[in-house]
Length: 149
Image (tube, rainbow, N blue to C red; front, side, top):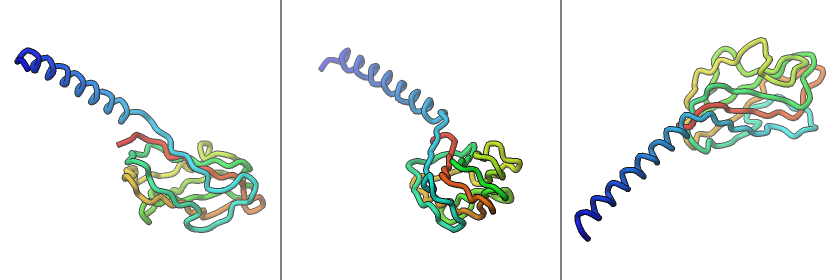
């Protein structure tokens, strides 16, 4: 093979490598959402640990964690904890859905994320610490929002 052809091939390979790097940067800056159901849509949720266990499909830097329900809690808020490898990702303020609301986005108390780095294949468990006292709530879902690392 001639030097000219080798040189041209190397130039094309560099162009492709550059495009791949650009695509990786683009993907790593995109917000992604991992959502999962913690309960079915009709059964009252109940307090307990490890109500859901899943594994992270990739590493992620969290920017927000949300929860929603199909039936709002009545009498008291729903309070949730999310654990990575057995340790809460929150400190003082856990994730909550206020009395009469269907989403944590409107909660009076914002969840305080202290462990924003979720590692690839980490074990994620959801604990339900409190449910509505008159109506527990149904159809609980969790949303992990952040960027892929």
